[in-house]
Length: 109
Image 1: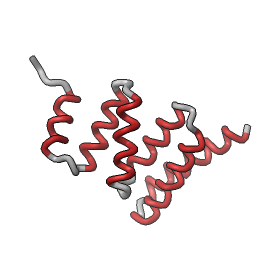
Image 2: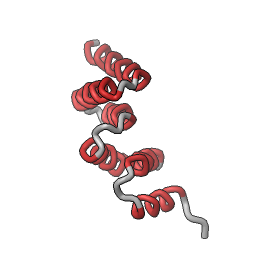
Image 3: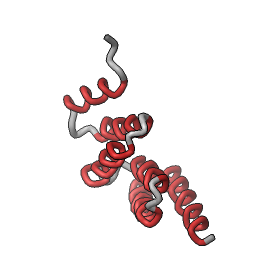
Image 4: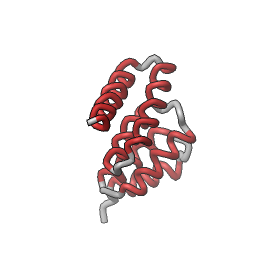
């Protein structure tokens, strides 16, 4: 029986539990499988255990938006912008600023 993508990622993560990319990949895979609880858990653990992993903040914020947790999403975007500035990651900063401003505009309407 073939091993699916989630099983492969779980096996890789078991071998390398501190690998931020694998944790991110798992969060993204759970989200793809529409398991928002597990995706949220993995994204939140990333912000706690790998706070400088810039890519987390955009996706966690978007997930929080879909869960109608807009204030939390804004906080995540703000934290992500600070992390992106420190990392001098202008692309990530621009993306985070864009989603932050869009959400702010939507909330003001």
